[in-house]
Image (tube, helix red, strand yellow):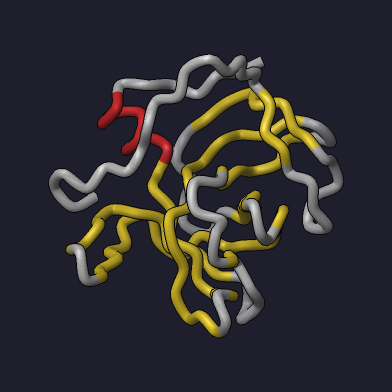
Amino acid sequence: MAEGADDQSLLTGSAYGATIWTDGPGDTANTRTVTGAGDPGVGTVVCQSGSFSTSLCGITVRSTSAKYCHFDGCTTYVIRATRGGQVAIVGGDSGGPVYTRRGSTAATIRGITFTGAGCTSSRCTTLYAERYNSIAGHLGITALTG
């Protein structure tokens, strides 16, 4: 991320478990238990779960060292992924998990979505996400697993 542009916040008063909500037509499970975390490799097929798209799967990682630039600066060493010209992220999905499915009910966290490109009416064909290892290393955190 651009220097000083971290947009995470710490919320208190909530209880979290090692589960992500997928709730969508792209996944076979409404929730998945997080059993691991780590960066994906190029060619890895991932899913993303967002507030507006619910779950979208079949998204292929094209780069783990991409650069995304906008008016506020550039973010480097991020995931760039596409879904064969289909929608990969919808406006408002930022902050949702990028994950790989493990079995019928488990997931490995791969990153967190932050924007899209190739957009028409907030429906984008390219997904950009922060890599899990970058987030964990930068913030000194690990994914809660169950």
